[in-house]
View 1 (cartoon, rainbow, N blue to C red):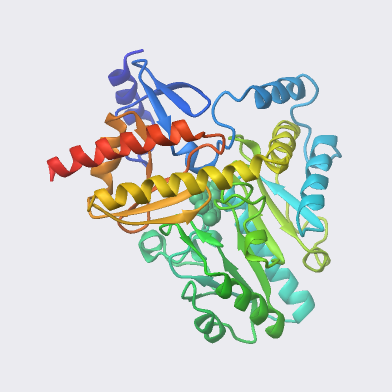
View 2 (cartoon, rainbow, N blue to C red; view 1 turned 135 degrees about the horizontal axis):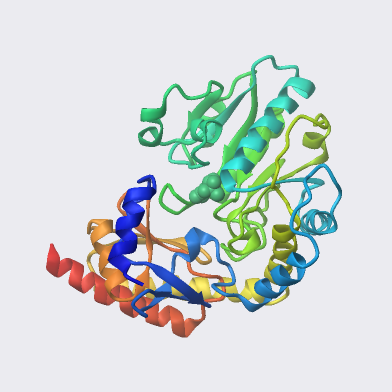
Length: 400
Ligand code: PLP
């Protein structure tokens, strides 16, 4: 394959919404990706916290193959077994009484906004329900989800935003109490802010939100699209905060790279929803549902999450060791295998230098980069990642 010719063709045909490096990936295996020149990369992006079991995962391939020979798609107008089994699995392993499936994280947030608004109208008799969201939060790029996203830079060229969203400070429950009024139907928060810079919420904040929502009759929505389902070392992120939400949005890892989003909710939230209120052509189809059920079973299996916690702690420890030697590192933070590193260097320079070393990392909010490896990464691979990162720091500093 002529890489440069392909990139040229891309420039001519594809809308320019991403600034991509000059690499074309052709295949992957486990925690590794390979480019068109045959170079190997240790993948600490994993499709941005998506490929929990890495690339070309044998079991996902097998489940997909078997399901593809049975039924690909027949519409949500009809009952299908893989969708029911996936919903049951989520209900049995979380707080949820009911689940709605869609195709992406953003769609899950859009659905959650609608369900919360309907709950506010029907159960609280609010004519125009609003939702309190967090500054620095990220919930997606379609208009509802973008309106709930606390980053003015992402909104400004697409205004007007949807009405009914107010903002408060993450980790400050007093500002949430002030932002909420009698028309507030819900508060939405990421237990660990992902795009904002990898900030795990303080447990006291999350508990205070639960208390506030109970006292004021508001729903608590956890956006666990990036931090949920194994990434932080527990099946759901809320478990580690000892706080149960009323609605939870999920997506990224749940089908190991196939597009699937989900909204999990209590019966109270599900009660007012009727046929026709919401829908999707593709959401929760047989292929993605069959793969997701297998993926979630493996994430929930005894021992797997323990390994994520241990390897996450090991990764952070190795990065903190590096911090003691390298003044470019300001802070290492995160939970499990969701790790942010605040740096003095321009993130793009460091990301490019890592690419040269055969290591994939990506940017997050502020002056920071993220490590979001497949959840199957082992300690030897973590050592390699840290070595490559150190070499990249060396070359980036030389460049400055
Ligand atoms: N919510 C959170 C917390 C996210 O991290 C993301 C994506 O990064 C989204 C929502 C949007 O998900 P998607 O890109 O699948 O639409």
